[in-house]
Image (cartoon, rainbow, N blue to C red; front, side):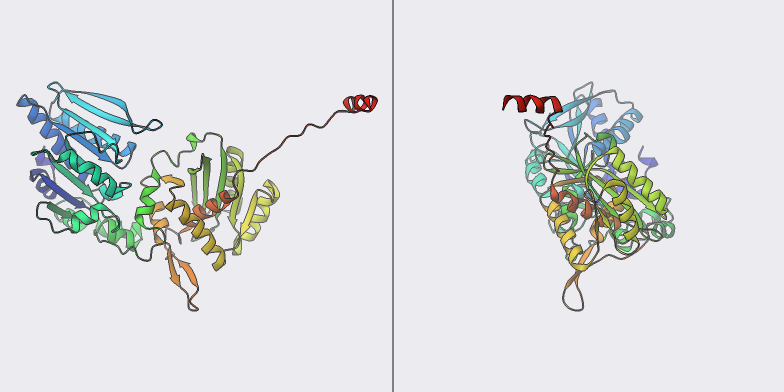
Length: 436
């Protein structure tokens, strides 16, 4: 199978170092190649009548399933290695479980794929593959829990990712000086030179985001100093069950709307309050939508969800949409917010507090949304007063981030309490009079 790989993949596959780490540009096959290494190790063990154990820790359940289905199982079938597959519940606590995917061979070798978590990293003595490690929540805690797992002589550790800022363990490992690590770096230029069929100019033009291009394709470590929401905060609230409207459980909802008509996006962000956590249920984005379409989208949100409060950007062209929404849905539920500097500071502060407290959940792996949240910067204005900036580009000027912050602000009121007091009917009132 190695003959089907590009040279940079072959170099990674053939490197048998005990501790191996690779920084690869997006969509260059890092997971595919590493799961091939795992499958080959299992297949060779079968031939030699021995057992091996591998654990794959991915960003979430969906990514773990992709690594297993589109990587491990695919390779094992190609290698004609017999196996059985199963799914089980892996208990993290009395209240929390995650899905564990496992394949087992005839001779007893096993490969388990799990969402990364300090608790899932414990309890094994196995070879380990950390997939997209820079994006794992609590990467330092995962690392401390994980390393004893591979302490037994001969066990291997594989770590791959694209960069994700400097505040994570992957950055420390890649930039460290320890010679024990075999390090591989494959940016988009190296991959294309080795034969990967990509049109670099077209990719860069279509992405139209210099920071994202530098980080995800040129593998630069971007400075986090000016970002209002560092990558670590964004990583910490991602969940693969967020952003799925079908998971709405009927709870109170809070909505934020950033108004855009031509160049910028029109964004509706819907949170459902579950316990004390705001779960993203839906993020609606439109570019160039007419005001009539925007009204229709908002009406559908009010129809589908139990909206307690909605905060809308009423700056500039937003005045009329806000007035129209208040007329249709009530001024007690719809509030217009002017994007003045003090108001933006309040919105951003409320939003950031939610990220720091892990009081919300956002969709996992949505690159456009992640970039929007991260591109917002707080800078000093000419008078020294703070202001927020984000380069206006094809992805808007952080429209998704402001819709998120508006929804967080809407939730600051908490759920509205309703009380029911029955009104006595006329007969009961007469009876009361007679008894007096």
